[in-house]
Image 1: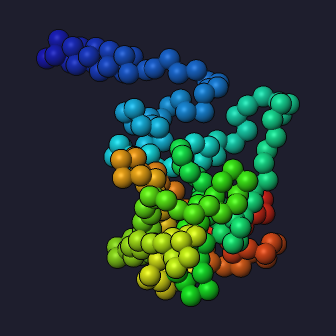
Image 2: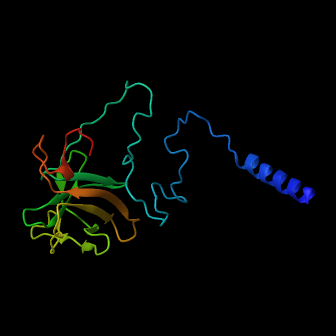
Image 3: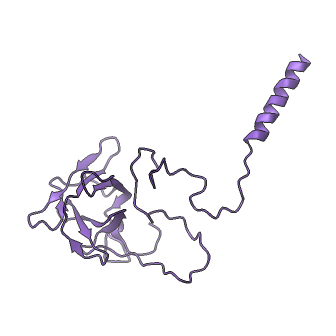
Length: 198
């Protein structure tokens, strides 16, 4: 009996020591300690599709000094919507007065450009009964606009999936669509340009 107890205790101690890892206490890599999926950058849910474009992480102040670069001010899109981007596009998510979603693709200067072969889907609302919107080109071909409207409510999770060509990997933007008017700027909270912790 004593031998069995000794072996069990020794085995438990061995597993405890082996499972310890040599993690450094000062991580300099903001991506250390979490997996971005196999070969797909920013694939947090492991489905093989990027969940957002580069630069969408907010890792805080994880770099030394501020020389040689500047922190760009948050800007709204040309229509007053939220700007989001993927590996090969920039776009504005905007909610029209009649609660339809309008996606306007943008150049580097945030000027509207006509959509080409891009497809967009928007999933939002109650997670147990989500609303799916598939915006298509508007009458003048300048943007993609949903034919259906957003669900009732003022604050709900939203996922925008953009595919720039039929063969391109889809890119996703995930955010909370808060339709409340910001008290500090001219935009709705989902597109707010203030720095008050959205």
